Length: 254
Image (tube, rainbow, N blue to C red):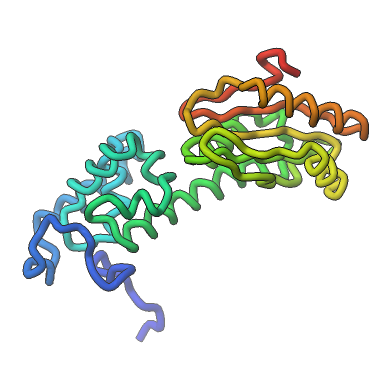
């Protein structure tokens, strides 16, 4: 007898019970055939055509299948999109806000956050330990994935070596919906600790508008002056909005 256990589509849910209320409890002992057939067709379409073959609500259905194994998840997928706007916003939504949606419990939140974490790791792997300036689009994708849908401002610093290879990506500060405290001396101090020779600053605007504020411009100038005094280059400052970003270098602020 094989010592390897076989797995099937009827695996147990992650948590003790299903969470979507669309089907009465007495009907959940077995997966109805119409749900089973729908899920099989949806998985086949995804495997054949990839993500581009599915609209956002069907991609969300695929994610929710494991969390809610015996119930129709389409209404919940559509409700999540109605509340948060799009697929990325659903995955990036804070846990407490997801929990406010009817039908969302621990299992659903866990599945969504697993997918979000996987997306972050994949995007990070494309830029970490690689030359940043020759892979600029990958860097922008990483910043968008990790920061575009945050509900408070975050300030990150990307530390580069003399070959412009990304050696560290660190969150320096978290703030409010429209402000994050930044201390130029701490940024430069950390660069020296890492033996970095160049920096890229990144922060997000939860409002969605990546236009630099006067405070953004001032703190960038302060960090640039502190860094240049120690022979460290500031390559750029990126402001990440909901669907676009602003580069200080491209806009002439650096």
